Image (cartoon, rainbow, N blue to C red; front, side, top):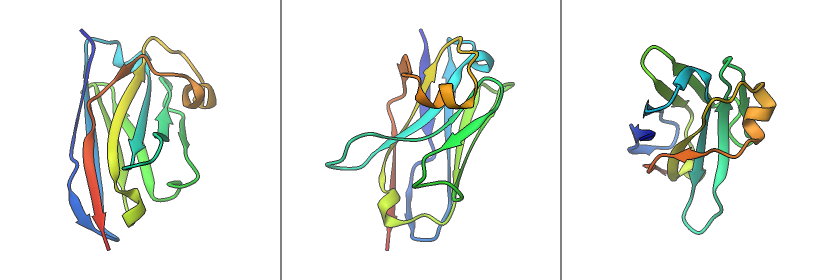
Length: 126
Protein backbone atom coordinates (compact mmCIF):
# COMPACT_ATOMS: atom_id res chain seq x y z
CA UNK A 1 0.00 0.00 0.00
CA UNK A 2 1.06 3.55 -0.70
CA UNK A 3 1.40 5.60 2.48
CA UNK A 4 2.25 9.21 3.18
CA UNK A 5 2.83 10.12 6.83
CA UNK A 6 3.34 13.75 7.83
CA UNK A 7 5.06 14.98 10.97
CA UNK A 8 6.49 18.17 12.41
CA UNK A 9 3.34 20.18 13.00
CA UNK A 10 3.33 22.30 16.14
CA UNK A 11 2.12 25.50 17.78
CA UNK A 12 4.48 28.45 17.26
CA UNK A 13 4.53 32.21 17.66
CA UNK A 14 4.22 34.48 14.66
CA UNK A 15 7.60 34.95 13.02
CA UNK A 16 8.73 31.48 13.98
CA UNK A 17 9.76 28.55 11.82
CA UNK A 18 8.75 24.93 11.36
CA UNK A 19 9.87 22.08 9.16
CA UNK A 20 7.28 19.54 8.14
CA UNK A 21 8.21 16.08 6.90
CA UNK A 22 6.30 13.55 4.84
CA UNK A 23 7.59 9.97 4.83
CA UNK A 24 6.52 8.04 1.75
CA UNK A 25 6.32 4.30 1.27
CA UNK A 26 4.91 1.95 -1.34
CA UNK A 27 5.57 4.23 -4.30
CA UNK A 28 8.45 5.19 -6.53
CA UNK A 29 9.21 8.40 -4.67
CA UNK A 30 11.89 9.66 -7.02
CA UNK A 31 9.58 9.51 -10.02
CA UNK A 32 6.56 11.05 -8.31
CA UNK A 33 5.20 14.59 -8.32
CA UNK A 34 4.97 15.60 -4.65
CA UNK A 35 2.83 18.38 -3.20
CA UNK A 36 1.90 20.13 0.03
CA UNK A 37 -1.64 21.32 0.66
CA UNK A 38 -3.21 23.07 3.62
CA UNK A 39 -6.72 23.56 4.90
CA UNK A 40 -7.68 26.13 7.48
CA UNK A 41 -10.90 25.82 9.50
CA UNK A 42 -13.88 26.87 7.44
CA UNK A 43 -11.81 27.33 4.30
CA UNK A 44 -11.20 25.36 1.12
CA UNK A 45 -8.08 23.27 0.74
CA UNK A 46 -5.22 25.29 -0.74
CA UNK A 47 -2.23 24.07 -2.73
CA UNK A 48 0.92 25.39 -1.08
CA UNK A 49 3.78 24.05 -3.17
CA UNK A 50 4.87 21.25 -5.46
CA UNK A 51 8.10 19.58 -6.48
CA UNK A 52 8.40 17.54 -9.64
CA UNK A 53 10.30 14.30 -10.06
CA UNK A 54 13.11 16.34 -11.54
CA UNK A 55 13.13 18.78 -8.62
CA UNK A 56 11.34 21.75 -10.16
CA UNK A 57 9.40 23.71 -7.54
CA UNK A 58 6.31 25.91 -7.77
CA UNK A 59 4.75 27.92 -4.93
CA UNK A 60 1.44 29.56 -4.20
CA UNK A 61 1.64 33.35 -4.18
CA UNK A 62 0.57 33.40 -0.53
CA UNK A 63 3.70 31.57 0.64
CA UNK A 64 6.37 32.37 -1.96
CA UNK A 65 9.53 33.65 -0.31
CA UNK A 66 8.68 32.21 3.12
CA UNK A 67 8.27 28.50 2.39
CA UNK A 68 10.59 26.02 0.72
CA UNK A 69 9.63 22.57 -0.53
CA UNK A 70 12.34 19.97 -0.92
CA UNK A 71 12.79 16.22 -1.02
CA UNK A 72 15.35 13.56 -0.24
CA UNK A 73 14.94 10.70 -2.70
CA UNK A 74 17.34 8.50 -0.73
CA UNK A 75 15.10 8.83 2.35
CA UNK A 76 11.77 8.86 0.47
CA UNK A 77 10.93 12.01 2.38
CA UNK A 78 9.33 15.30 1.39
CA UNK A 79 9.91 18.47 3.40
CA UNK A 80 8.29 21.86 3.85
CA UNK A 81 10.45 24.50 5.53
CA UNK A 82 8.27 27.33 6.75
CA UNK A 83 9.78 30.61 7.95
CA UNK A 84 8.31 33.95 9.06
CA UNK A 85 5.09 32.19 9.96
CA UNK A 86 1.89 34.21 10.20
CA UNK A 87 -1.38 33.46 12.00
CA UNK A 88 -3.00 32.99 8.59
CA UNK A 89 -0.68 30.03 8.02
CA UNK A 90 -2.63 28.12 10.67
CA UNK A 91 -4.01 24.99 9.00
CA UNK A 92 -3.77 21.24 8.66
CA UNK A 93 -0.92 20.58 6.23
CA UNK A 94 -1.09 17.45 4.09
CA UNK A 95 1.31 15.98 1.60
CA UNK A 96 0.11 14.34 -1.58
CA UNK A 97 1.63 12.38 -4.45
CA UNK A 98 1.01 11.73 -8.09
CA UNK A 99 2.82 8.48 -8.78
CA UNK A 100 5.04 7.82 -11.78
CA UNK A 101 4.66 11.41 -12.93
CA UNK A 102 7.57 12.56 -15.09
CA UNK A 103 6.15 16.06 -15.19
CA UNK A 104 7.73 19.44 -15.44
CA UNK A 105 7.25 21.95 -12.66
CA UNK A 106 3.97 23.57 -13.65
CA UNK A 107 2.26 20.37 -14.77
CA UNK A 108 3.18 18.82 -11.43
CA UNK A 109 1.68 21.87 -9.69
CA UNK A 110 -1.57 21.51 -11.63
CA UNK A 111 -2.00 17.73 -11.54
CA UNK A 112 -4.47 16.02 -9.23
CA UNK A 113 -2.75 13.74 -6.70
CA UNK A 114 -3.69 10.09 -6.33
CA UNK A 115 -2.47 9.60 -2.75
CA UNK A 116 -2.88 11.77 0.34
CA UNK A 117 -1.46 11.83 3.83
CA UNK A 118 -3.54 12.32 6.95
CA UNK A 119 -2.20 15.79 7.73
CA UNK A 120 -0.36 17.56 10.54
CA UNK A 121 -1.63 20.61 12.45
CA UNK A 122 0.25 23.90 12.32
CA UNK A 123 -0.97 26.64 14.64
CA UNK A 124 0.56 30.11 14.56
CA UNK A 125 -0.35 32.54 17.32
CA UNK A 126 0.06 36.31 17.22
